[in-house]
Length: 178
Ligand code: HEC
Ligand code: HEC
Image (cartoon, rainbow, N blue to C red; front, side, top):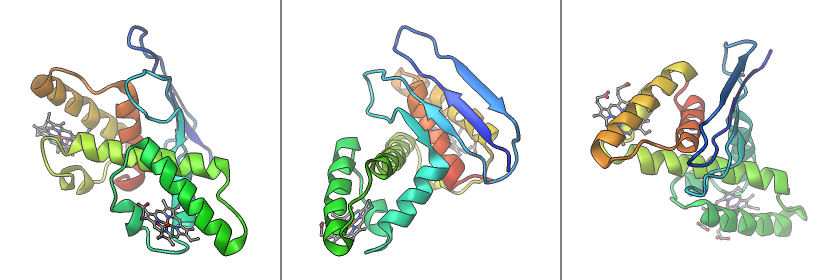
């Protein structure tokens, strides 16, 4: 399948955000998405995420000794997930002699950090079942998140930063996509 790549560069507070979308093929669940996010200094969101790959690395790596509910039921910020994955890497080393590679560690931490960003941001005004009960394609989720960002500004005085929006869209495309 041809790939659908979105590159989002979110830069600092004073620099506008270029959004480059190159779409060879918009179809299908095989769509690959890379989100590049510059450090805004305001969040601990990842620099680059391919959510499809990140989710599959997470599912493969973290279901070997216990159910995925164990990590999915927890809320941690990035530093907390880094510690957990390092601990799990040691657990795995004891079991099979092999730790979790630094590339896989990064993917897993990115995925779980995006999940918690989604949960913390999107539960402020309504239940998470509101977004999770829907299925939408990428373009529709982008529209919804833009609108929610406006709702956020109306209620809390601030829009949602671009890196937050990009991570939430990526997470929802994987978990409530079509
Ligand atoms: C080699 C087996 C093994 C693998 C692979 C593994 N775990 Fe664990 N996990 C454990 C064991 C054993 C415990 C309980 C003892 C502990 O906390 O180390 C645990 C506990 C946990 C806990 C609860 C404790 C805490 O620190 O919050 C979380 C969350 C967790 N694992 C997440 C993960 C994630 C995420 C992955 C994938 C990176 C993963 N696990 C992969 C064995 C494993
Ligand atoms: C500041 C409050 C607020 C926040 C934060 C918020 N929402 Fe909403 N949401 C609303 C309101 C109000 C509505 C109903 C009116 C509307 O659709 O704009 C709504 C409706 C929705 C709907 C149903 C309508 C549709 O378009 O399908 C979805 C899905 C949704 N929100 C998803 C999200 C997601 C995802 C986030 C996190 C980025 C989020 N919301 C954050 C206030 C909020």
